Amino acid sequence: MSGPQCCSNPPTINPTAGAGHVEKFAGLDSYLTGSPHSKLAILLVSDIYGYEAPNLSVSLGSDTVCPLLLRNLADKVAAAGYYVVVPDFFYGDPYNPENANRPLPVWLKDHGTDKGFEVAKPIVEALKSKGVSAIGAAGFCWGAKVVVELAKSRLIQAAVQLHPSFVSLDDINGVDIPIAILGAEIDKMSPPELLKQFEQVLTAKPGQVDSYVKIFPKVSHGWSVRYNIEDAEAVKAAEEAHQDMLDWFAKHLK
Image 1 (cartoon, helix red, strand yellow):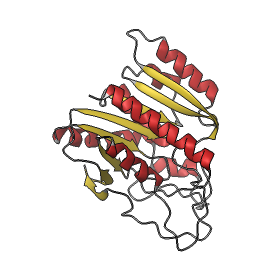
Image 2 (spheres, helix red, strand yellow; image 1 turned 45 degrees about the horizontal axis):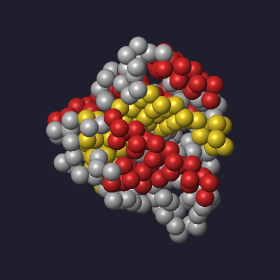
Image 3 (cartoon, rainbow, N blue to C red; image 1 turned 60 degrees about the horizontal axis):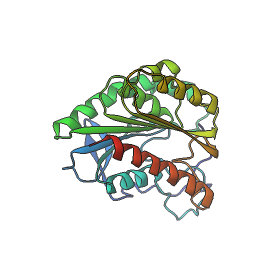
Image 4 (cartoon, rainbow, N blue to C red; image 1 turned 90 degrees about the vertical axis):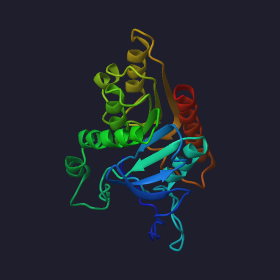
């Protein structure tokens, strides 16, 4: 899950990048985009690098603002007619791979996915209180585990996991809402063999829970939100995953 930093000479990350804005939502700083009057909402749950993570795979000049790819994706989802919330589940403390004194296992003790699920509950309630009639959620890596917990609890109406981490067969067995799982061919966290097992569990469910499992060739864990924007093939693969996500929500959120 770790990767190189955005830039060798890190530029300023523009916190206002994107069409939306940051404000408190259910007590969390959140990037909000799209019409607040939409009856359909999407919750995007980030990976360990947080809700304002820049592109971690391309070096840019020191005077260049890093693209906030998750926020760009949020804007793309909002343009399809949804109200989109991207919360800061880590309270300003995303994982920093350069901090040798706080390796990932230590960081995860403070920011476990179980805590993320508890934090997500009031976000869902806040959306419902705004009059939202259907909620979808997409999670990336760490966020996929949070989303599967929301799905198991039936707090959302449709789920998408992108390069999931920490998700087990038992988790998938507990899901009975529409769920799409988009994985990478090169992924030690959720290898294709595990995703095939997820698919078998889902297709064997009574009642025919609608599900979709797709493994993207030649890409690595994190490819949908951490990629080189100058690499045409990387951009193409990410955009294909984004469209699959949008298609899934269009099918299942009414």
